[in-house]
Length: 141
Image 1 (spheres, rainbow, N blue to C red):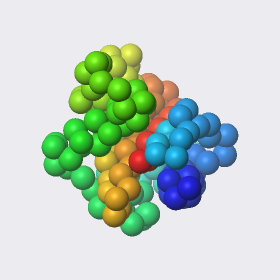
Image 2: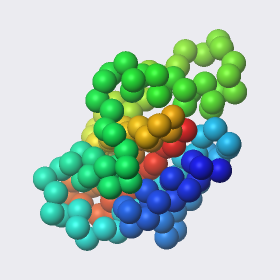
Image 3: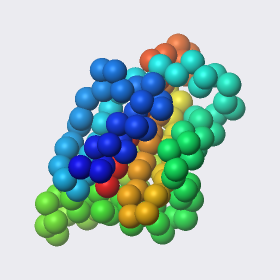
Image 4: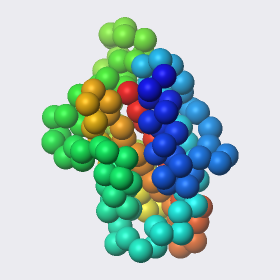
């Protein structure tokens, strides 16, 4: 239940709550996608700076340690795969996502944050030329 409240607050702070859709919803993991409508985004130098500020506003500590990020991605993979082995985890999940959007001509970045035992990853991407819409995906577990 707490991951729904946290994800909702983050989506609201990104001004992306309206029209957002859950991509995956369980008691352990919530993934929500929406469109950021925050006009203040343009005041920031980069997607990363903007997303870091939003996580800090919501009481999260930024996670930059590669090992912690890999543990977060492994946890997501374990939940999505139902805890079963046999398929290797996508330990480069966020980096792979970023690269794939960049290859399609988008600007993309992500930030990971932690508060207590809750970890959140936020990704944002948009077309390099049009710069709109600014899609966001929040992963919380």
